[in-house]
Image (cartoon, rainbow, N blue to C red):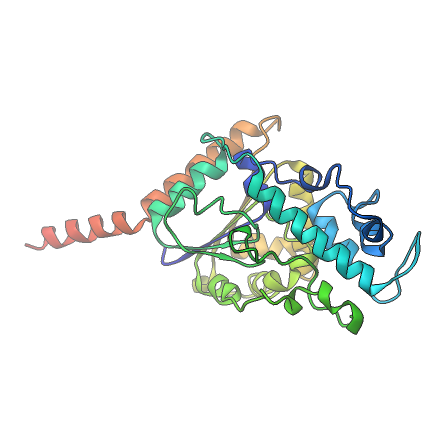
Length: 305
């Protein structure tokens, strides 16, 4: 193993025991009336807007001609609602209980990643749930609460309306360049934990997954890819997303990579199997750590004396 990439989503924080679900944050939210009558509030806090992976899909539906139950889009009200949502997210995450479960998959993995010392970490979360435990730089793709740089919105949309460009992530004053695409291509081990790989972040991963599914991929391009998610439903959602990303050839992706999915739900009937797979992953990280590489080199040098 040369280099690795860890990509984390909200499922990572949830596995730690943090209350960071969409409902945790927005349950009981009661903003001013001018926010409540916006199309954005109607879409986000209506019956369909109760999950992070649906939030950006709902925001996307404002383009180009969305009509809410209150009438047509009014960009001023939607922009105010957007700002209030960011403030709500930031204030809630700063003030929430940050106690964690040190027996969780997420806790064990992040310490193994740190000890391995070969991984770059990319977080799609706003929290400092990684930095609290390890001294390592983390790229926060969508900003973080510590410096009030939360980015909320959708990816660039060809049907975007100039009046609604504030809803596009790339128009945020906090949006920054990152090297995630390059890191994915240049690594031989990639781990996703708690990331839905949904449409909202499709552009970050599309090229990577398509490349790893090309017929005739060379042996040197083969990668170890692990996806850690919660339950069977989320496993199927992710696999179908990969199926769609890869020209309906999920079988090629399996064949040309060392690929597996691990579930963290203790109620799953295959939980013991996933426990073993996770233990094997931790062993792999230890075996391929920088310190272990150095020990092997030292032993090899000694053998030639």
